[in-house]
Every structure is written in structure tokens, then in C-alpha cells.
Amino acid sequence: MLKEENYEEARRKFRWPSVRNFNWALDYFDSRDAGRPALVWINDELLDSKDKKVFTYGKLRALSNSMANGLRELGLGRGDVIMVMMGNKPELFISFLAIMKIGGTISPATTLLTPSDVEDRTKRANIKAIIADSTVADRVDSVRDRLTTVKAFISTEARRGWLDLGDVYEGKPENYRPDFTTDAIHDPLLLYFTSGTTAKPKIARHTYASYPVGHLTTMYWTGTRPGYLHYNISSPGWAKWAWSTFFAPLNAEAASFVYEQGKFNAARQLMAVDEYEVNTICAPPTVWRMVLLEDLSKYDFSSLKGATSAGEPLNPEVIERVRRGAGITIRDGYGQTETTLLIGNFPGMMVKPGSMGKPAPGYDIVLVDEDGAQARPGVDGHITVKMEPRPIGVMTGYHDDNKRNEEVFRLGLYWTGDVAFMDGDGYFFFVGRADDVFKSSDYRVSPFEVESELLKHPAVAESAVVPSPDPLKGSLPKAFIILRPGYSPSRELARDIFLFSKKNIAPYKRPRIIEFVDELPKTISGKIRRVELRSIERKRREEGARGNWEFFESDFPDVRDMRV
Image (cartoon, rainbow, N blue to C red):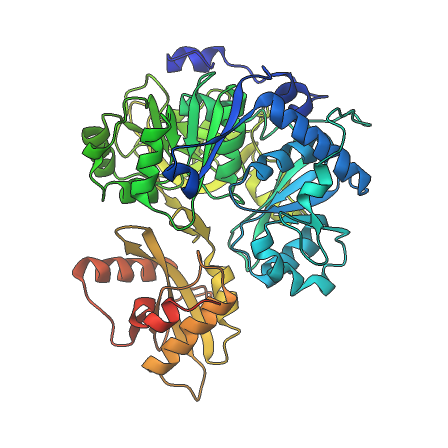
């Protein structure tokens, strides 16, 4: 499949490999050419000096073996869940490989988590160890007395009460021998917290087969080949990092390019692609839109052989403008935290702007109505995956959530919760979420999570959070708020709620717009009609109008710029 550029032939030939007793880190990664580059890492300082740090497959093998020995000395082993909360550092690669080698389960976490997020995840996932950036350790320490399951706190730098990550693996033997046999089909490798339609995030459970092997489809979609330098612009802690920064390029025996940048700067990103001669790149639509604000003629893109995008539908005009400016066509794709790449515009395929593409080899994708009957071409249907025979790249289920598992695995199908239609040529077009989850700057936002936090403010009686269209970020979280008796709409109250949100809700999901209203549209059964609010908000943004009691976070520069 790696060399196949005829989609129909690739789809016809592909078969999922048999991987019962298989540990990707030990059996695949460690057997690659030791001298081949696996990771090329830079930060702002290295970019300015046009330098880089290169880690070969052999170097990462040795470092991860040492760390695996160190983790085992700490009493960590098969089945133990370890939260990894750090930035785009080489240590992140080493940690992923080491945890796999001891048979552990990784729970990736964004560095944007609040203390309450850390506490909730630790309890629900039964976390045994936390490996974190020193910059976020204070947040962990603020709830540390309640993290009773954690027996090891490991930081990227020495600090009181934490083990230094360097001490965990430096000086440890570079040879490692496992004391167990991996059951790749059943042993849990990843627990991803992902937003859903309840107040608490769902926990998608992946095995030692479903992500490492399942991402063969992602590898094929990106077009990455052995020896290529692949760049995926994604924050660690989110599934897309594992998708396209870790498994896809390393499955291809390519090198993953990582730029640990502070505040995102599109011009410097383009400079990096030019300077380090990136071959394939994947980025969310938000990044592509920001890139178009720059003068593309200033950069040399001749090294680029493929560009992809996923996370939300990519505007056709963005594809065309990038094609004109950089000479390359962005190929859109679709998948979930719960799966690997399901649908895509693959190398060699004709790209239909606005389309997600066609089903990936190894997956049988069917659009169906509520009863499971197949939808006709041109008619909206639920995106489902046939589970007989079961494709490797689908999660085993949601952790400790039998009710939800019964909802998504039924009628011999996995129900993604998304809606699309298919044209007469077999191309899929995304319509939207079947529930109310939306994306802002490629981050999934659950209205219910945000609404639950807003209810903790003494003035908030009820709220409904919906996406507000934004030309740069795709959408911004907006909260329609009904106040409790005794409170009245005012600029001062709006400021207080924005300040409360900034202190208590992670940056990617906190409301950037709020509007005080007297009532919310509801169904007869009492459910909020967010579809109606979305329509109202979309029309208002198109007209450039503003509600009488509507406030933007940007109205309060002191709150927006405040450090918390």
C-alpha cells in the first residue's frame, strides 16, 4: 500500500496484517535501520540559527530502552496507565516508546488542562504515573493530595516532589528485555479523553494494534515514503499528534519533523518548511487559513510532495489559493479519535474540492439512516463503519461506558456520530455532527463541558454553547446565558463571567462571546435546540450585527491579556 498510487488497486489489494502477539515499539520500531533519521526537532532558537537536532531510529531505540528500564525500576509495568502531559519535545517520543515497551497504557493530555481536568482524568482512568512538563507541574501540585492513585510524578526538569525525567532513563541499560507477551488485539495502549455530549469527556480506548497498525491508512493518505521528512502541525495530547506526528511517519520509515514553537506564527512555520525541506505536511484548516495571510511567494516549496488536512471540512477556496501560491493541492481527509483515517483524498486520486474523498483501504464505509438502511447518493446519512469483519483501526470502545458503547456499536456497524452524503462518483461530503460537538481551531469543544463550568458562576442559571463563525479559527465558542433571579445583564457582569471562564475553563474551549438572553429555544421534551441557535448566530455574523446584550472577550483587553 505504501507504494500504491492507484487508489482502486490499493483498496482491492489491502488486507489488515495479523498482529496477535505484537508490540509495535519492540517488534517494528526497534527493527528499523538504526542509522535512519526518525525525528528532526527544532525550536525558535534552532530555526534562527538554521540548526536542528536529529534523532535516528537507533538513538530513540536506545533512549527508550533506558527509559523502559527506569520505569520498570519505579514499579510501573503492563497495564499501568500513565498520563503524558508535555509539549512537542523529543522526550515525548521517548516516553511513548518506553511506555509501550513496558506494556503500559498511555493517556495523552494537553498542557492546557486545568487542575480540575487533571483530577478528573486521574480518577476516571486510574492513572498510576504522570509525566509532565515542568511548566504545568504547579497545576498538578494544586490537586496532588487528591491524586491518590498516582505513585510516580515525573517532570521534564528537576523540581521539589517530582522525579527528574532525565534521571529516570540516563545511565540505565540501553538493552531492554520485556517480561511479558503483548496481546495486541486486547491490551490497551491509549486512553484518549475526547469531548462528547455529556458533561464529562468520553474515554476512547485503543489497543496495541488499533492505533499502531490502524494508522497504515493515515500513512497511505499522507503520501509519506521511506526517507521523507513529514511535518504534522498538531499539539501533543490530541489524537492527531499520534496520528500524523508519531505513527504514520514512523510506519513509513520516514522522519517526523517537529517544531516546538511558542505562540503560533505562520510566517515562521513557512520558514521552517522551506529551510528544512519538508516533503509531506499535514495541518488543520485553521493553520491553512492562517498561512494564506502570508506572502507565499517568499518561500521555496519545491521539496513538498504532498499536503493534507483533517479535523474539519476544508474550504474549497483555501485549496485553490494554496495550489496557486505553493503549487501543491491539499488533500482533505476524515477520521476520529476513535478511529484512524477512514476517508481521504489519496495520492493519485482526483481531488474534488469540498469532499473528504473516498473510503480508506481496509474500511467499508456506509451512509445509513437512523434504522441502518443505506442512504441513496446525494442523501444525508450517518457515517458508519462495517464491523464484520472488524477493521483493526477502530477503538475497542469507550472506557467504563457500556451504555455509550451500545449506542455506537449496533446493527453490525460503528456509528461515528457524523453525517455526510455521497455523490454519484463515490466521493463523500461532510455535513456535520449528529450531536452538538463542534471544533474551534481544530480543538473539539463539547457544549456540555463548557455549560457545566458556566453553571458554577453564581449569576448563571442556564446556558447554551454553540459555534460562532470566525474567518480565522473556523468558529469560536459562544455562550447564550440566562441569568439567575437577582442578576441583570450588564457590561460589568459580562466581564466577570469572562474572567471566571478564563480562570476555570481551558483556553481552547472557554467562551469568547457571550450573550444574555431571556429564554432559550427548546423542544417539547425540554432539550435545547442548538441547531436554531447556530442558525441565528450564523446569520448574525453574516450580517455583521450585534445583539443588545452581546459581549466579546476582546471588549475587555484587561481580561484577554491577563495571566492566570
